[in-house]
Length: 320
Image: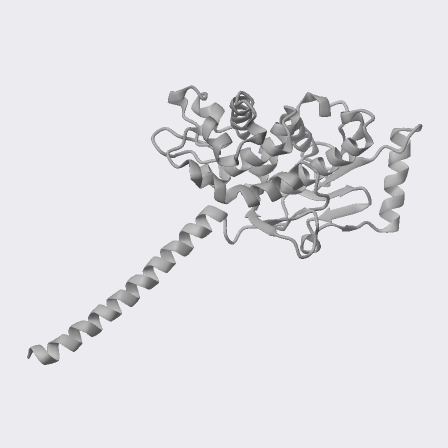
């Protein structure tokens, strides 16, 4: 009896092991889809070198949060390295998702704890606030920009797994280069194409929340709030940074990438800057050269807004 039972038991064990392996793979897939927002509109960031360089893909939710983290940092005058540290930290702590739960009372993008003085629950769940608190603490770390990323992040976070931040540095570096505007046309997003209508007043308000009141006098809106065919928000970037032409160009791409990263939530249909355009309807093409007709119209608008100089502007058209 035992001679025949043993192979049967072995067969059952093998089938059980195979089924268990499939179950583990399925669980892993579900977890990855949950963390990365699989199935939803996606965004891709590329190296400044363009084709052939490294890329990083993330969900629309992650891109929107990353854009907020970057905007808050640059508005505070923090360098690109600080933005990289912040993005790597948020990637590790929350997967760039604004979580309403965590270890003990940890919350938000950076898993900050109300009980440890980071703020109230409501404040920490505001990405602008939580990013600002992170930079506030990072700025107090002597020589943080010269420290290894894991060391700088750990001095702010006091994590039980400080080395975990290191694996996110390459992706955070790509994101920071695009979102601070140093890499041009480097961030593109797919469109959900759900037919929703946007509101230029809301877009303008979000610009001010992310980049501060200095952007307010420069930004102009057209179209009635909430109306079909809403309109456009235009930001003459030179007036937000003074006469530094190089910084103006970088600032322009920073604003343009922010708008693309926020396009899904704010129902942004098109973003144009420096003769290049991203549109929700043709999001699979990424940033492309604007037509001569579009460029001519942009040039007319530019001259009309500043008769004495050709002032580049980021134009954000809202979904109709």
